Length: 52
Ligand SMILES: [Zn+2]
Image (tube, rainbow, N blue to C red; front, top):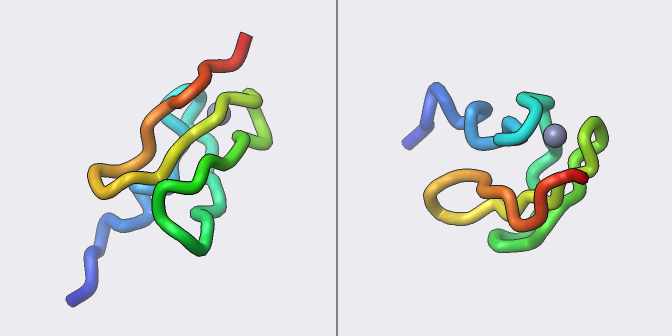
């Protein structure tokens, strides 16, 4: 089953930049644009540590 809006789950909640989702779920990635740390959970990306 495909999710037509799955790319929305890769948008940085802080700045809206497209992020590369990590291979494993629940890993934290750092946004290339705003330096926020974003975790990709089951319910989509959430900011773990906002950029200063
Ligand atoms: Zn960002």
